Image 1: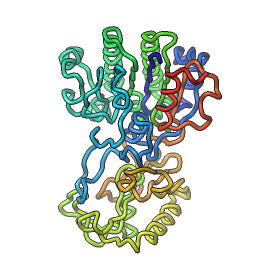
Image 2: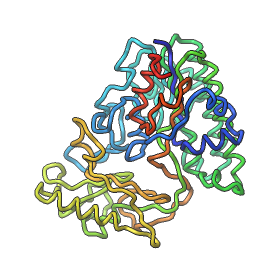
Image 3: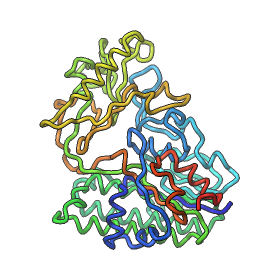
Image 4: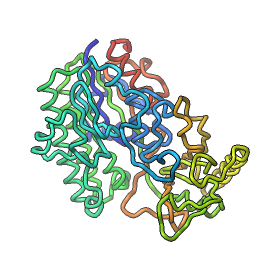
Length: 427
């Protein structure tokens, strides 16, 4: 078995790289297209990086690895906790085979960084660089290079110029760290993820879609930098090293936000103590259902939540009612929800009891949100123009023919495919 590398492009849809490769914006990717296969890939549902990257690194369904979003309730409470790598209930690939040596750079949903045979630098969300790095001896070098896990959202959202500057600097440093580690260490598997792509698309997707947009040229220029980074990483590999390039989800234009908890309040399923506003601890008795970001709906079950009010005998009726209401939701004559999934339609495994009862997939342009205390169901988004999609992530595999890659690949199928590629099976 030889070496292998996975390059991740967070949030990049299949259609964008195909377009920019053929337009000459991404010449390195265009060259790679002649050497392998590029296909659209299904993301996780919901298409959230914490879920999709967890599915990639474990090769497992969320019902097995137990991650359903960036936030979860602490057991028996309405207290929301932010994602931790310790939530993962299935082993990631570097724990499955600790005999191999790994270099893992900027992989989301791995914070805090745990022990690995090699190097692990967590991707977002990683509030403390010190806890995002293993081994700790690498910290001093990263700080000297001014290594950043992510761009400054607040500052960047107020200034596109600052956003492009931070994106370029962050990417340049990340490539330099990758080069140093690959040249310094004996390694078997390299994972290198670029997350600035997702940030740019969220803020300025309209700059990609509209050639007359004032930032269209800068958008393309950043993807030229991304393509150069891909070229530099590929040049660090041997010709016989396995190579995959993937994204965790796609992206499309954001037209309007849909506030699910506001909807549930209006329909009478959610009752909140509005003063003081105490997050989910404001849920009152009599609440039947509530939502967590971005599109997860939970029944307020007796015995599971402190003020649970839904008995087991009422669950099916409530799920049917909510499904019909969501299916019938419209905005300006357009259907809002494309699909309403029951948990058992999406998830299987020992962690299914943590899964949401319903998961919603919106129609194009609708961005589902679960923030509490919103005054309107439909709100325009200031400062953001791109939103995640479930169906058009990308999968590229070097050195194979088309029939070696499934026709309808999924993010949880990446790891098994990569392992076969490392063993030289696909051809």
